[in-house]
Image (tube, rainbow, N blue to C red; front, top):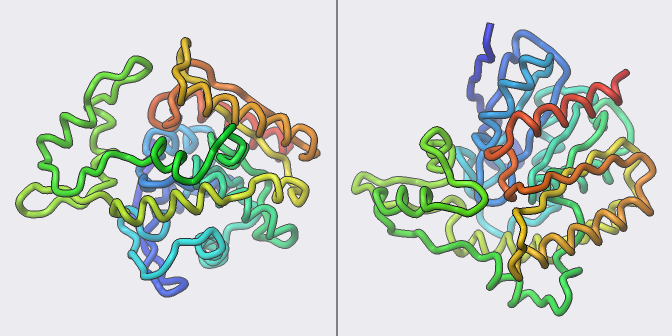
Length: 298
């Protein structure tokens, strides 16, 4: 029997939070998959079924203001979104889950693990996929303004659906989005009756969250981690251009810091790989998660 995906909602911390789960009734070792900025739980659509085949029970929430979860007023601080994860794990009654986070989701998972050190909701281990590895402030000469200019997305607000398709499917030297992956990407947008799109979160909210990522201090959390950690860092295809080289070098510094501080750390570099690992290399990522998770459960 293949993986059966279903959607559910929880009311927590003043919002309706959507999440996907696979084979929840069948059981298995719990693994919670936390997406990054401007993505949704569907980021894991190609990873979760493979995890089910390997004996895992995946759950993937849409973070606050993303996907089918409610938007709320005010800033989306890390304190707030980590508390969302705390209550999510309490309400789903998961014990000793493996926590996996991509980019901003990795930072959420890292801070959660630093806070929750004991009890049934403490993680069995954490997997940081290109997130929570280093700090943007490590980039030489970095300022918030420079980081914003580097990492701010194209403002697609009001774009036609046809033009959005064209924008998403444009060729990339490392990896070009496929028609199979396109629905996963479209889940990041609201599409109105006139086929005009609005990104979720919207452009201004995206920049606000990006500033919180800029301010996030990974290194302050490393000494508090008491669980096995797998860091999966990416390096795009050579030769690296200026921005790609800066990203690679700050990840290198982050890995070096983590190796000095985190007691039980495994590092895996995924070469010739873009940032969106769950979409480009789902099978390889799944095997890394599975091998790590089973090694700490033995």
